[in-house]
Each structure stands twice: as structure tokens, then as C-alpha cells.
Length: 299
Ligand SMILES: [Fe+2]
Image (cartoon, rainbow, N blue to C red):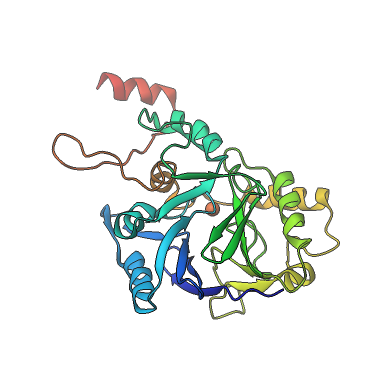
């Protein structure tokens, strides 16, 4: 049965991210999936233009935002979830394995103000769990691989796949972040590809591809099964793992990896201001030569 879920995409060209306003026309209740906080790494300037566009669209349509659904702790943009919560009262939800991601990254950033138990989020979601969005039902699919905490949200005939899949001509996300696994990613993707063929799949990112001039973010299970360059029907688990690991070894760290992770494992909350009223992000230095470290310390 097709649902009447209404979906409005917002593409952020700076981070290639798609935020979705997902609403139930019967009750006009809505969720925002993967909201973006605008952030300029060079200047440290953060602003809410992208989130404000989503809020303005909701307001114009008479829609009430009650939930922010994160598909995972993103490594390429900062989340605007706290801003949306502040403006609407919406609850912020993410997969329960965010605890694992916090456990991995707290030592990396030496963060002592992150719980490790996910309490920065309002709701931690389990695999297979369902909950209402107005008269619609949201089903949670735990799809680890890109990160341990990745989830997809199935609402009516639509699934918001996060970074599990990209458009068929681009393939799928990397699996080499800490806690990532190409084997798990393959199995998670198979779970999505086992859904009914006409199920609509909504990507979290698009980067175009050579030969495609426009951004795209919607496809179907059938299209992915037939055409996904990394994981179409017939690609075996071992072939996929070999491809993914070979390819991941060539990929550079995303530009906003370090700022994004330390903010997003706090549910998008920015670090507390220091005594001068300024908030600071941390960059762990990785000195290639241990002697340099001593030199820096003694300088
Ligand atoms: Fe991601």
C-alpha cells in the first residue's frame, strides 16, 4: 500500500547534503531528516540559512516539525538539529549505536563532556522499532557499515538511506571510518535491496558523476539493484569488500571530518564557550615525527 507521505528535499551545495522535510498530510506533523548547519571552515563562521529555509517551508505549509531524524553522525557537515529543536521543540533521534561512535571518538578528541551513553539525543532508536509521525509510521532499519550507528528510516513507500547508498551511477559510501566495515555495509545494502522494487530511496548526498550535470537524490530499489555501479545484483560480498577497501584506500579525509564528528556526536550541540565567550573546535594534531612532538613541547 502506498503511503501519502509528503517529501520536500533541500539540497545544500556546500556539503552536497540533502535535508528532507517529511510530513503527514493528515495531521501536518513532520520530521526533518539530516538538517545542515552552515559552516565555513576557513573562518569558523556558522549560520542557519539552510535550516531556516526548511523552517520557512514548514511554516508556509502549516506543518509542525516534531522530530529531527539523524541517519548517523555525519562526517561532512555539522548538524542543525539543536537549532531546529530550539525553534520547534522537535525531539532529536538517532540510532542507539551512536553510543559506540561516541566511545570511539571521545578519546580521539579528548572530550570529557560527551556522555558515551547517547544522552545528548532525545531518542535512541533500535533496529526494527516503529513509532508514529502523525498518522504515518516510521520504521527504523539499523544499517551499519559506513558507521556503526547508521540507520535508515522507512516511512510509507519511502526510505531515507543516509550514506548507505548513493545514486546508482555513484555507488555507495566509504566504509573506512573508525568502526566502519565493508562487510557490514554490503549486508546492510542487501537488506535495503530486499525491499519491494518500487520502494523509493532518498539519498543523503549527491556529487553528480561524469556525464551527469544535475544533482539527483531519489531512486528506487529496482534501479539500485539493476544499476548501482558498486553493488548491483550479482556483485558478491567478497567482490564488494575487495572493491570497497581498494577504493577507500585512495580517498582523502572529508574536509569537515574533524569539526563535524566532534559536534555531531554531541547531537549537533556546539562546545561550551570558554572564559572569553568564544566556542572552540578541537583539531588533534598528528605529528609525523615523534621528535617534533618533543620539540614542540619544549619550545
Ligand atoms: Fe556519512
